[in-house]
Image (cartoon, rainbow, N blue to C red):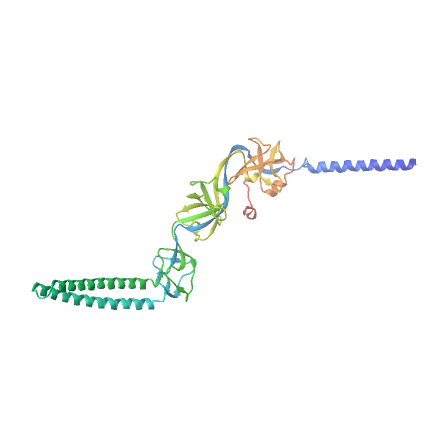
Amino acid sequence: MRKIVVAVVVVAVVAAGLGVVVHRKRELASLASPGAAPVPVRLVAVREGAVTEGVRTVALVQADTATTVAAQVGGTLVAVLRREGDRVARGDVLARIDPRTLEDAAAAARARLAAATEELAHQQAVNRRDEALFAGKAISRQALDTSRAQLEGARAAEIGARRALETARTARGYADVVAPYAGVITGRAVEPGDLATPGKPLFTLQASGKARLLSKLSQSSLAGIAPGAAATFVSGGQSVAARVTRVYPALDAARLGAVETVLPEAPFGLRPGSIVAASYDVRPVHGLVVPSLALLEGMDETMVVRARDGRAEPVPASVVARGTNEVVVNGPLSPGDLVVTALPSELMALTAGTPLRATAAPLVREAREVRP
C-alpha cells in the first residue's frame, strides 16, 4: 500500500513539473528574443485632427445631352448604317427608309400644283374679262361676284397645292434619318427590312462634349452629400477631381437617389455607358488620426502597433471614419504616440515586445496588394 502511495506522489510531482515547463515555454514564445535584431519600421505620430469621410461607389458616364432618334415617316428600312459605339457628326445618315412611296407622293403633289396653277391662270383671265364687261354694264353685279369668288377659290387651291408639295418634299427628305448633332450611338433598335412608322425609335444618340457622371446611392449615403461636395473619379490608375453638380433626393423604385456631376468632357476618354469608380466627400470627422496603413484589420478586431520604449505594442483601435489615406480611430492612444505603418503581413509579424528601429525609408507596396 505504501508503494502505491509513493508512486502516485511521484507521478503528481512529474506532471506538475511538466506543466510548469510548458507554461514557461509559452511565455518565452510570446516574447521576442532579447538578442533579436531590431526590425526597421516607418513610424508616424498620432495626431488630433479630422478626416473627410467619403462615400465610395461607382458612376455611370453619360452624355449631358441625349436623345432618341425616331422615324418621321413610314416605310421599310432599306439600310441601317450605324451601330452602338459609332461616333457620328451632325447630319450623318444613320438609316434610310424606302423613298419610292414618298417620291410618288411628291410627284402627285407636283401634278396637283401644276393643275392648280393652270386653273388659277384661267380664272385670272376670266376675272379680267368679267371686270371689263361689268365696267361696260354687260354683266350684272351678281355675275361679277361669282367671277371674283371663283378667282379666290382658284388662288386658295393653288396655295394649298404649293404647300402640299412642300410637305411632300419634306417627307421625302425624312427618308434619310440623320444625326441631329455630333455624338455617339448608344442604342440601335432596328435592322434592315424592319418597318418604320412615324415616332418609332431607331437609335439612341448621346452628344459629344459635356458628360454627366451619375451615381445611385441609398437615402442614408445621400444625406451628407450636397451640390459642391468634392468628388473623385478613378479608372485605369487615373483620377479626376470635380464638384457635385446636382443631388436628386427623390428615391426611385429601388429606393435610391442620384448624385450628378457634370464635366467638360467624358473622363479618361471613355464613351457613354462606361463605369468608373467614384467617391464623394460627406463630412469632416474629428478625433485621433492615423494613416490607413497603420491599421491591421482582422475579422473581430482592428489593431495598430504602437512603438513604446523601442518595442512593439499592439493595441486595439476601432475605426470611426475613413478618409482617402487616413482614418479617425478610438482606442488607448494619445496624440504624439508613434504607430507603425507597414503592409498587413509586416504588421502581423510585430508581436508584443519586438524590438523596433525607426527608418525614413518610404513604404513600397506590391502591385497585388494595392488593388481594391
